[in-house]
Length: 337
Image (cartoon, rainbow, N blue to C red; front, side, top):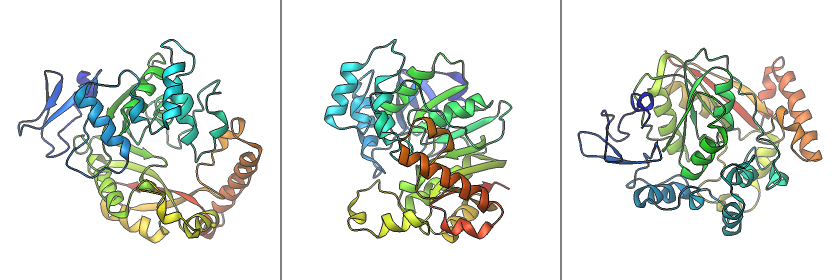
């Protein structure tokens, strides 16, 4: 168990200190959390989960089954899981799990890359250089934003409910000499000490939560940030043109527990100011979600065109600020005071 990581952790139920014994982290109240190959698992059995893979991760950790790939926790179809297991090799240039997880990355913009990756698409995380300070990546999945932050000098801790995705991130980037740690857990019940992180970042995660769960997660982010800390969280905006199309079309409310929830700008500002601090909103994408300029070499021709339009609109919105009301995706930037 990494002693530096352990020094940051507390019980997510009562925020008491933890000790490592017999393969578990334990608090003085008797709560126990399994540790799998150095990764602590802080999912809470008594809580309704925001996504099904969380329950699968907890079962795999408690029963010590499914390793080293933990394909049941990846959120893949049965056929995709078989493909990961068949193609996995410990020394492969591209991790087999990530080669399938890529399909659900960046707003499904990488679907054409499933099983065909030649390199990992790592975006430029929109935060300043870290100078060795702590950054929390909420919903880190296979680690693309965590890697980006570590390359910019941050000491990064990623948290995600998918044990398999975390293990994939560790396999893919363990030799990159990056300052990275991962825990398996729930954004609503963060297992970190209060006033710990200089920055919290999250992309395409909290927008999937119900409003009640999202506010719990934002409040936890506010708790673990330092007094001068910054949260930069991507959220889906209900007023965007493509967002309006998606949320008003037939079948939207049947998409399941992890569907995208679209927020008004006023609601975002209210929740973040209440739970973190002074907040500003920045346009992140127009014409869809997950449209990153760095992805132009990976996505389809249609997606390339959308990215170009989105980038131009973002630049224009920095001058004509009312244009943010047409943005499909925004960054909520809050400062803890």
